Length: 79
Image 1 (cartoon, rainbow, N blue to C red):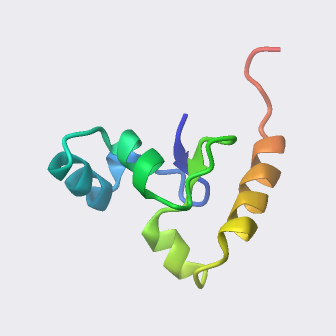
Image 2 (cartoon, rainbow, N blue to C red):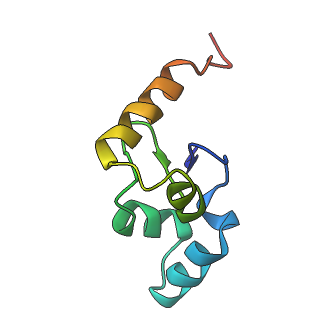
């Protein structure tokens, strides 16, 4: 499930992504996949603008490392 790795909001819960996706006639999730450089397809995570700027604009590589560390710590519901 696609979400911001830091605030856990989904793209359709972020007004900025809702607005841009409507203008481009696509879903908020499609917008993130196509337009947000912080999106990592391996983890299905991204960093929303609020979190990105709040963290001081870390490099994309640092973000991906943080996502993957978080992703490894997720316990599957069905084992």
